[in-house]
Image (cartoon, rainbow, N blue to C red):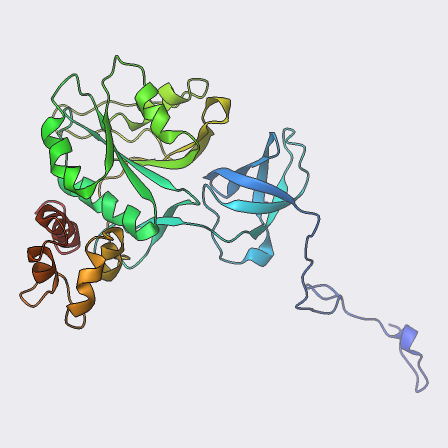
Length: 330
């Protein structure tokens, strides 16, 4: 064994290699000023498909992003192999500031928020008029989530060949929500017109024909569809991950999301829902502190009685606010 004397030189000393490397630590991180801009199209088990210019690139999240999530619709900065060739992998080094975030919780008592889509500007709530039967409370919950996220809601009623749409459309008329009814045999031009130039997220419970509608809007990208269980009246999940698809001729984007059984609103503060009612919001100036807008001292009753707003609008507001207080089945 080699031994060292009293006058050893520094070069004679053997350094034990470190598992963490020999480079000194630094908090400085590269700015990646040459990173390419991309849009997240889908996320699947840690692999993120992005649109970079006219190519689809597979990427993974860089370590420096930490726990920051990446969701469909995100605008990201991408470095590495951007060729889009098979078996290549790029890195997402930055997630740009989001203009909107659509969230939900699994249940009303679940504190964990799930981000569904980023940077959308419209939420299409898809429901069937029959097979399965419409669930108005589910629609109301989606509307609350849309108003909270700053998205313009759009009500899309499918299977109008099986049941009339007038009654359901009438119940949402006071809200001023744009709506369209389609059947399974008609072209979807009326829907496409309402999506033009927009980034629209499609939500709805399983079996309502959401993915079938998306397939008709973007025929070159067919996704699997399912059927409704004759016993339970519920659809089977066929879409397992959100996917952004461009409408033909650059007419906008549709984001197909997995069907949901419930839409929890634990993350929504009731005070933010009133912002979607600009005709009622000024009337809250006289409300008591922490007013729920559905109590005897609420100033909105006097505001509406004085003729400043339609009573049906106040009824609609209180119906939406009540969705946070009662489970869907109530």
